Image 1 (cartoon, rainbow, N blue to C red):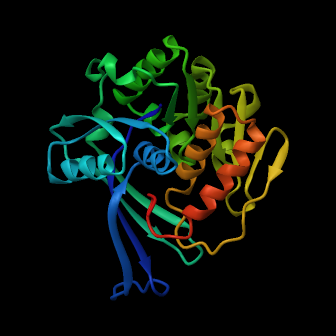
Image 2: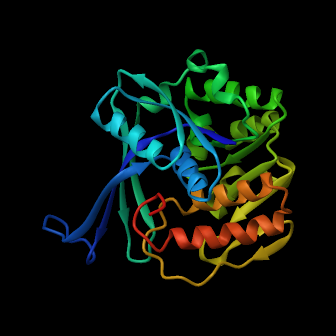
Amino acid sequence: MMLSIGDLVLDVTIIPEHPLRPDDDNPAKIRVGGGGQAANFCAWAASLGEPARLVTRVGDDDHGRRLVAGLAATGVEVFAVWGAEPTGAIAILVGPNGERTMATERGASVGLRPDDLVDEWFDGVELIHVPAYSLFTEPLASASRAAVASVRRAGGLVSIDLSSAAGLREHGPARIAAELSRLEPELLFANRAESATLGTSMEKLARVPVLKLGSDGCQVSGRLIPAPNVRVVDASGAGDAFAAAFCASYLGGADPLKCAERAVVVGSDAVTRVGARPA
């Protein structure tokens, strides 16, 4: 059983047919669906046949109820706390090479508190995956630390994804590095920008640091693992797909290189479709 804690939000993905023209109409494909890094990780884990749970907080509104029901329908066990604030949303503008610009309103998700957590939610959890988004803002950060402590007491593993270079800069790289030192994750995921922003060697902070390199694959244990050559449509959720596949393989006893080989295949498949979740 793998569990993640954090955002379940509404994704609005916009893929223009041509370069945007200011102050004019711009034909585009627009997709509305579920998002949030923690939720995406769970959706991808479930698609790989892994038992997955999400602990989250959403607005007590139509969007929140539909998002919880939609994720549960994919096989994820969702433990949702209902908040008075609106459910969060992310507008994602996809460029011609699959690059993304995101505008984020996290909404109710950041209000999750330690006393919202229920002990039974963590029964049988062998790995908790924590997006750094869940460590940037209180009280969600305290709830995430409490969740990690619950999993640790039962002998489980900890995986952390650094999530966002912008988020790291705003939170403070030294603060998040100190947090990682306290949490001692077995697995730590970051892309180039996040690793550079952190400013501390990932090798000092985790048993297995994994550097995600996009279309170039990833680097782990001093080895470059190349990714398959695919046509990139939308990179949303690819990192979450990668992390889910890596964590599932690691939990199954595979060595880091084998985990990486599986993860780049799953992550590469994710970029060939629109949206952050499995089809």
